[in-house]
Every structure is written in structure tokens, then in C-alpha cells.
Length: 424
Image 1 (cartoon, helix red, strand yellow):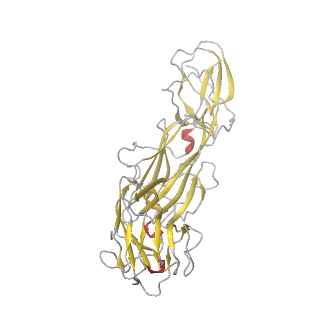
Image 2 (spheres, one colour):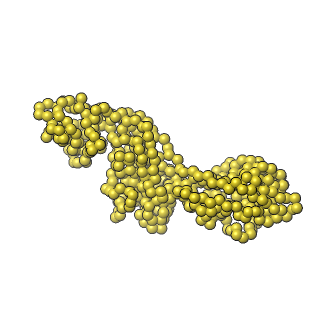
Image 3 (tube, one colour):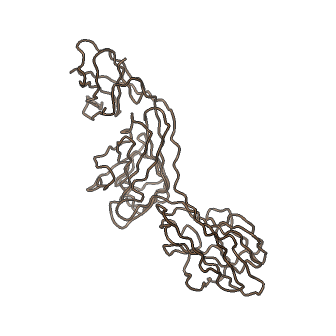
């Protein structure tokens, strides 16, 4: 066996950036007409939509009413109730005495404006609108405790029966109407983080394909991270080849996170702080490990886990990436809207001597070097070219007795965690 000590120079080539992944979006509709009388509850009352097989919790929801026909829309009071029991008044005493004929209204917290109070209303998107001077009273079984923004549904489970209550609050013999095309729910969901235990889904998966080269750098972006006590969070990322990195554990203290965008990047200026607070920004991964933090539970792989995203360097970016999230203490919960990866790759060198069983083990080096010993390759002497993250980084002329097939070749290089070698 021979040992060789080499300082290799890193050369990175940017090949591509992985596009962002999106949160899950769902559409559910009831297309049956709703008949509105001259006074009182519509028929049916309520109109129902049953939501099934949606994962995660709501982060945004819109509701659309199709084909509104009414001679005096100021009479209309419309209330939406979720399966969790939350209720939102989406329309009340708006649009005046102006005829509505076949109007489609979408209610969206992010719409640019409210419905008109006394002017005509046209098809479009509007914020939930209430011009009532005194609280509306809906007849049973409608609730009479409600909110005025659709974000009241955020963080709740969308599955179950949604109820739409339509009520005409003022009598006039001519003022009848309908919602002829029924109504539709449109919502997006996030990863739900419970007050204790595994998130849902567990894991969250992203599949990437068609990316050439081997990994030179990976950054993880957590979009819309919300949690009442972020110190409870343990977050682990697994690559398609099985490497695992604990990107965040017991960090950021007890100050709540609200819709934060956190980028985890080995090259960031500062790590995630221990005591917090953490806001939107870029941080190095950090694991402030306490007892039990590595016990994610099945189907998560067992630890120990790497502490830096560079653990993925040299691997293939293609395949299924998995994000495991758990809350390791009781009482506080949250959600993550979505997540994505930015992956930088370098060309894969030809004629590599390693195979799927190729591995490198972290050891102790000289001075400030990190030595990754036992780079197992089947080499038989000659000229060998070393690669760091896919880039040629040095050439060794091997003379004398050949290294036996299956022998061990040791190499040292600076601040990295992967190396390949090929015979020229």
C-alpha cells in the first residue's frame, strides 16, 4: 500500500440551477345552482363542497361564485364555513341596487380592491367585503361568529365538508336571484408541522431529472416557514443517493417565525443562531443538538447526519430529494409553504475508477487540512488524475510497484468532502 499527500485546487463550473418547486394547489367545485328567495335562506342552505385527499394545511384560499343573478344585490349576505369550524363573511350589503346578471365574483385576500358599496359590481376578483353597520344574523345552522378575511382559514386542515350560506336580508317581492353556476374553492397547502411529532407529509419529496454533471454545491430554501417556537424544529434533507444532512435543529430560539424565507447555504456569512431570533435571510446550517433530536422516526433514515450541505458534493442531483421535518417538543406548531433547491453542478469526469460502492471517510489531517482517507479505487499503477467536484485538480505519476487491485489510495485536499480519481 502507498500513501500520497496532495493539496488539490478546487475548480467549480456552474452548469445549472434547479427550478423552484411549488406548493400543492387544489380545486373543488359544486356546480349546482343556488336559488335565492325574496327574503330568507337560499336553497340549498348551505350549499356543500366535500374536500378529500388534500395534504398539508391551508396557506391561501380563494372562493368563486359563478353566475350571480340578483335585482338588488345589496340584500345579499354570504358566509363560508370550513370543516374546522372557522367562518368568514365574504360578501354583505355590497353592490347597491344595481342589477347583477351572470356575474362571476372571486373573493381573494390579495385582490386589489373591495366590492363597491353602492355602485354596480362586475365580474372580477375582490377582497371579502362587508358594508353592514350592525352584525349580520344568519339563521341556523349557520354560525354567527365569523371573520372578515380568508386568511382566517390559514393553518387549518382543508379536508372535510365546506358550507356556503347565502341569505337575503330584506324583503321585496321582485328581488329574487340565484348563483346559477354554483361555486368553487381554490386553495394551496403547506407542509403541516404539528405541536409534537412528524410533519405531514413526512417526508416532503421533490423529483429532479435531466441535470447533467455531479453536485458541486447545494442550497436549500425554506419558503414561508411559520412556527410559534422555531427552537422545536428538526429539519433534515436526504439526497437521491442517500446522504443526509441536518440543516436545522434546535435553532432560532423561541421568537415566532412568520412566513419567513430562510436560505441554508454553507457559504452564508453566519450560521442559524442558537437563541434567535431568525428572520428572512441566508444562514449556514446549524444543529444545536439536544437529547432525542436525531430520533425522526420511520421512514426517516437513522443518524448520525452530516452538518453541512457539502456532504452532497460529488453525487448525482437527479432523483428524489426528501425533506424530513419534526417538532421535538409539545405545545407549538406551524407550517412550511414549500421548499426548493439551488444546485450547482460540474461535468462528470470520464473513466472514473470508483463505482457505486465508492466511499470516503472523514479523518484527521495535518494542520488545517481535512483528510478524507480510504478513497477505495481499483488502481494498478500508471498516471492518475484527481477530481474535486468533477473538475480536474491534479495529476499523479505513479511509478514503482503497482497498487494491487482493491488497494487503498490516500489523498488529502482542502475544505472538501468528495474526491474522484481516474486512470489516464
